[in-house]
Image 1 (spheres, rainbow, N blue to C red):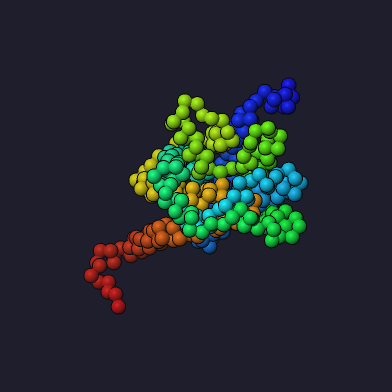
Image 2: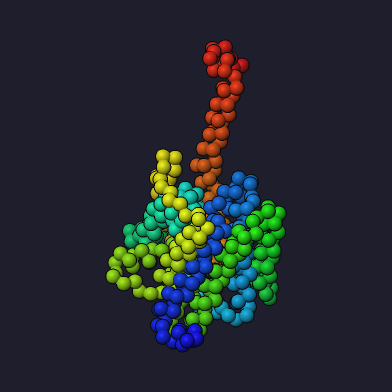
Length: 376
């Protein structure tokens, strides 16, 4: 049986779910292996320690942009059917939502995609945080938080014709930009001696985003039914999947229903094969409060920004969507501020306390006779 005969036996919804599962498996396996994480990249960047984690994010983004723009130039992806490029968007939502999401991912230990990937490796902390993100995202979409989201989104709207900056670029400008971005990422990764397997895995992670755009566009152009052209995102799809499981005995099949379980399964398989699966629970040091607050900020911020660090930052960014780039930039700012306020100051206090302890151990006479020590 060839693949065409196989596809003829499936409904439009089933094909969408299969595509979502394929893209999700690819993303899950290679995101787990590459340690792809925007939060880690942001912390490195803002602490002036840019290295492997920042390089991995650059490689994924560069590969996603180059491949996506190549498919667009070849006519394999129809940008006229992409919602982010043709519907009105919110600049205020991108800015405020991005700031909230960026701060939240620092507190929660990872962005929405990273939480899903890590939860499949046995990390119960990220699983709980991911569930909170999903619940808050649903409340922001249709529940009690939706009026606030709609109000903030209405402050600064841009129409569909103003959401892409591809028109500002020369012919093949997007393709050239993607190539330049990837070449820089490769140079940066080599300079910081990133493991070759991590580099390959990071690029395949980015290619899975382009694969999502390519396959859903292919289905849309070959189906009699209306098919949404989309790619990898997590805040909205995770909420849809969870609410479907709660409210209905059977999940209505679509791309997102295949994507989320696919990512989880892919990450689980990768962790088991490489023996990286390990149960991790909340401890006194890790705490629960910061994870909960971070997850709430990400759930609301992600829906307000129009997507998570992957959904808006990468999937929308490689399509040259202006609001996606603004959201991504805001996430970087939000992460830097939160890291400085919460973690960096705490690290400095711990370092000072450790230095004082070592100094006391090396000068026991001062510890025994503190009255002899004077401060001038």
